[in-house]
Amino acid sequence: MGFYVKFMYLSRVYEKITAGENLYGKKKLEIPRPECIVLYNGVEEYPDEQVINLSDAFADAALLGLPANTPPDLELRVKVYNINRGHNESMIKRSEKLEGYSVFISKVREIEARIAGGVRRLSDDDKKAAMKEAINWCIANGILKPFLETQGSEVVNMLMNEWKLEDALVVERAEGREEGLEEGLAKGLAKGLAKGLEEGWTKGLAEGREEGREEGREEGREEGWAKGLMKGREETVSNLLAFGIEPRQIAEALKL
Image (cartoon, rainbow, N blue to C red; front, side, top):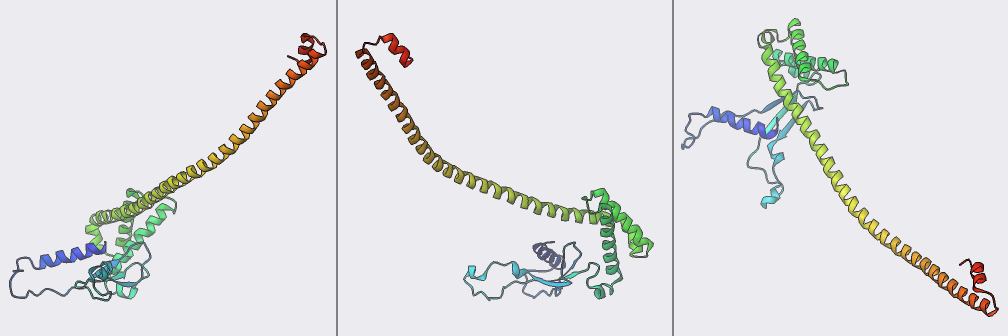
């Protein structure tokens, strides 16, 4: 549950408490002092106890032209306690139901890990099977027995809805990372392509100029050689003719 949801939940609680009261009257309306507590049993690492503040989400006071250390006009402090197995055990043991809930959730995850075998993602049927097995185990061991015997199916439905939300958040984060990766790859590819085209164009232009000059020099040499050869042949023919050699003989000699 996000922090903003907790804040809205608290406001709805006060709304129910004050229902039917004159909220716009001059008389001060007394409301219960809030004590906001969250019991954490998620799968991610979390400290035994932590306090989170609504003001941590507020924008910088400097944006309103206020000194940085100006206290907020609205605050909400929430105490978060980790109730997973191995955390806050002395506190959990004070409540038989809280301890039973902690044991039940731990048993569900233990069975899920066994079913998954560490190599595959659990289906909804796998999760339901794990919950039902954990319920039967708890009933057999006297843990939340009266409650689970009468409300077992409701527990399964509640946890399935809760864990589907967790799965959806995981998928959303994964999709966000994938979209970010794709966007970064596309931008990098476009930038690299543009740079490559620019470098390729520059290099190609330089190479083309060099090749053009080389081809020009080669063509010039060939053309000069051909013209020189033709001129030389002409001069040779003239010389041979001057020596009284027949044109047919000249052609054979020059392979014309």
